[in-house]
Each structure stands twice: as structure tokens, then as C-alpha cells.
Length: 353
Ligand SMILES: *Cc1c(COP(=O)(O)O)cnc(C)c1O
Image (cartoon, rainbow, N blue to C red; front, side, top):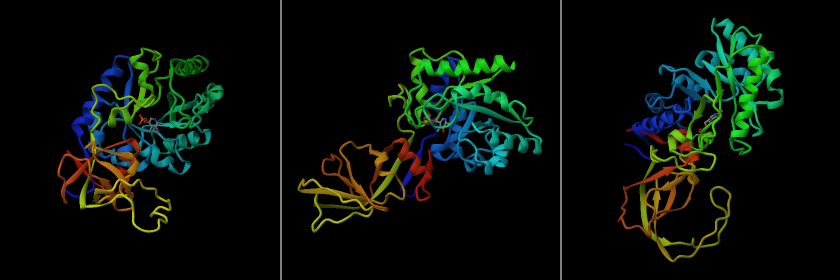
């Protein structure tokens, strides 16, 4: 096995998915498993489907291609670029949308390919990322019903992504109300009301999820076991489905403060140091080209991260009970940002267990 490595435990992903799917099922909510943070590695995506995700959702065409052979519908999460419409219709059954021109182009492309592409109209309830402004949503929905190549599957919202707005009974009921106005005005039925991402889960336990919300798009809660409105752990989920592992390449006792005049580090920052005398320093064969260093946490709680450059990660082993030596592997938990960086880096070996 090569290092640094991202170790992916598919059984834990499957278990986490199942726990959340069962929780959601009690409220008649289907779970779309979001694969973007692990770059849609098919083994991990498959584990989501085995755990009960009825759909796989991703933000990248490249990832949609990787998911091609997994037999569930695919949902494009990011509002499509006009330059992508052909691939969207090819690799995704459903996409989230908010722009008339793009929906028109998707319709034309779908007709050309003899397909029908489904869309979920995104409504902005105030988080200020994607979506038609809530006051305009009913009229906007009416304007796209004419298109032959698309079907308006439903409406949806994304919260806690840009503005940090927390999903509540109030704003999600507002979404349901918009859906019902659309249904009434145009005499149609909306199959899906998509109530957001992992930040909406807290409403389930509080019994505050509006009844007609019937889909959630879950990423972080499945892969790391956190709800994301308040950052709480979800009871019964595994925190360690993903592990970042790096190997010790040098281990020496050295001062805690550099010797000489201090200029800038490799990233243009002027570092500051606390003098703790001589400490046991290890260099790991990993760096910022592999991992977002702020996004990893040593599993050995006595290890602290001192810093990193492109290829070197320096840790303090002074307080460790364990006698580490050169060649040993240090394991880390990952945050969402840490996982995203490790999954994305070509230099990190991906190991499925
Ligand atoms: C990434 C994303 C999700 C998943 O968010 P998590 O917080 O990881 O659950 C859901 N919806 C959209 C539109 C996204 O971009």
C-alpha cells in the first residue's frame, strides 16, 4: 500500500446510509446519496445504494460518468452550465435548475436525443446561493411547463451553504406552500419536494419536518455522520468511514523554535512559534498538495500538527504514549474539507476496505 492514503470503509458508508435512510423513511422521505465529496468513487457510491439511497447525486459531469453503471437515477446538483447541457441529458436523469435559458436548452437537447429530462426547480428561500427568488417561483414554474423535452419533477431548496440559513419548519413550510400554489395554478402534481441537505436532518428528530417534504440530498451526514445545521454527531453513525493515513519519514528531537531570523514560510505567511524547549518532531510524507491540513485530526489525541508545506507535514509526538518510529503510519480523521481535498488529490492513494 502506498502513502499518503485515503482509506475508505464501504461497510461503514453502507451502515451510515442505512441508518439515515431508515430515519428518513419514517417521515416518507427518500434519500439521494451525494457522492461529490469523494469524487464519486464507484465503490463508495455503490455502498450508498446498498444502504438504501434511491438516487445518486453529484455536482460534476465527470463524476456522473463514473456512476454510469450503478443502476439508480442520477441527479445533477449544481445548476448546469449552458456548455454542459448535452452531457447533463446524457449522464443525469434529473437536474436542479434555476435559469430559463438553461432549462430551454436542456429541453431542446433532450428532444434531440429522444429523451425526457426531469428537473427540480430550485427556490431561494434566503440562503442566497442558487434558486429562483421565492416570490417569483410560481410564475417561473409556469413559464417552463411548455417545454417538451423536460418534466418538472418538483421543487427544492438548498440552505446552510452560502448564507448559513438553518432549515426550519417555517422556511420548509414556505417551500411546501410554493409547491401547492404551483400545483393549484397549473393543475399539475409535483412528485418531489426536495427539502435540502444534511442541515435539514435536525428537523426529523424534533418532528418538525413538513409532511410533504419527501426528498433530502445527503452527503456529509452519510460520509462523516454529522448533521450540518449545528455540527452535531448523528447517534449511531460511524465517524471513521474515511481515514487519511501518512507515513513517518523523519523522527527527531529538535527545538520547538526555528534557529535564525524568521522570514516567510513556503506559503508567504510569517510563522509564529511558542518555545517549549526540545520536542519530538516527526515529518510525514504528505503535504498541502495531498490534503487540506486544517481538515485532518490525528486519531492519537496526543499528537498535534505543527505545520505543513507542499510535501511535508510536521507533527509533534512529544506527549505520545506510543513509541513511534520511522516508517510508522499516522492515521487521521477527516473533516468535510479534508476529505474533499484528499479525494481530489491524485497524489493520495485511494484504498477500499
Ligand atoms: C453538496 C450538496 C448537497 C449535499 O450537502 P451535504 O451537506 O453534504 O449533505 C445537497 N444539495 C446540493 C445542491 C449540494 O450542492
